[in-house]
Image 1 (spheres, one colour):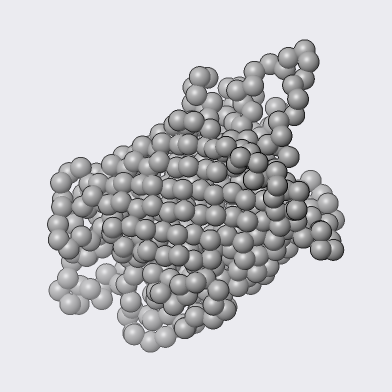
Image 2 (image 1 turned 30 degrees about the horizontal axis):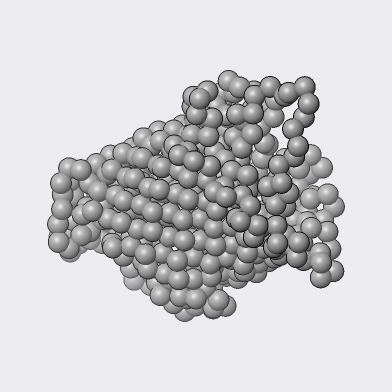
Length: 443
């Protein structure tokens, strides 16, 4: 069954890239060290309470958020081992070529609005006797939109998990409920999954069952070498619904269900190398991932059930310039994905994005990006539609330019323009030119 326009992840994708901005530039504008070191900002003390559950993305430092003290609330919570953060996304998308239609068939065809609010509460479990740096995270999300096929309205728990490490972080464990995309792949370091008319449906791991919105019960084990750069991350989790992410939301609206219909075990393994930027070294993240899903998917050609769905991906995010000797500069982010076309509507994809953190000396906390993503539709699925006399697109292509401007600490305005070839699988539709504006608030 084709599930192409029901992939609700755009609100999170915008915010993931901001972690690179704020995390890399929180202190980039400090200039040369003065003769007398300034007092340590109190807000730095609260970073230890930021969630560590989302391994695939760096949390935005508290000092780079709106109201780091939260009127004294953060200090009061920290005294008892708690941490709290929140993010708000408010977005608008419209095809400026004027392809308005009823019914609307892709995000932005008519003026499309969506908003989300995500909250995170963490607790230091060492206060209860857990070993080392054990931390519990409870996160929830509300999403509202006027075009619900792209962004279904949800109110759900998104993370209910414990993270802890051993042997100087050479062994890290994550267990509980969490979406798989927050542990693997790196979906939106420089790009933005909301920029394409299909949203993140062009991301092959989602087609193969990696959870994106609703959390899935997961045990994730990460082993690192003594340098902490090389790692292997393995997870045993439950697949998202074979019916697609929208069906997963319908089957598990609260996020707490252990099982959903037809969703079986999913195995994910990622082998990689990760290095943060320093005065002498550029940042780099290289990864090779595999997914194997034991859920039964319907084969397009035969209509029979198959329990042998899988995916392979290659990803590389590398810093290629360092004009100020830190994490600012140009980066290249590239990905290649493959899965069998017998059961996956989009089975191949390639992405190349160039993004610049701190593009101007006077704007160290901004980011600009340009990128291209091409995703290929299953040939077997296209043959099936052709048998019914229906035309279908062979691929969808999105080319994007965007700029994220820090208006105030923790307040970002992101503007983007995306040219999309084949915004709809069937019937074949004219090209789209999507204008995107979003206001992001990080508390």
